[in-house]
Image 1 (cartoon, rainbow, N blue to C red):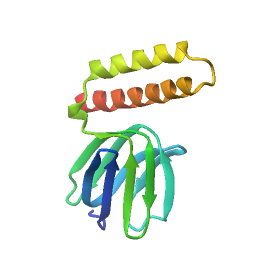
Image 2: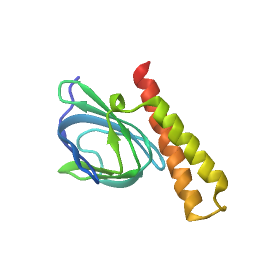
Image 3: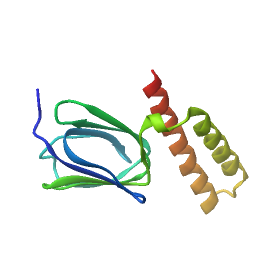
Length: 139
């Protein structure tokens, strides 16, 4: 069954990643997973690193490895402002494993509660989430 389309825009610091009509979005917020159809209740939420699935009109699914950011749902559109939104095909599991190991080493070396420890923890979460997306794409 087709659902009513609505406008989605995905922006990163580098620019627009996606803009168009979609039927459904699935992602993860700080409080859990969220699915968004047209006429969703207005919302502003923090996003955590995860897989972002966008179902375009006609049922085609576009996947992204999504970094942290925000989602804003309004009657006119859904806007995602994220640090990264990357096609899983453009990611390397080996490189992500190295990023994860580096972040873990930085976390262990950082003083507890320091900004460096928080940054290393965020990098670990992102690398872990992106690895899950890459491995899911390979399955």
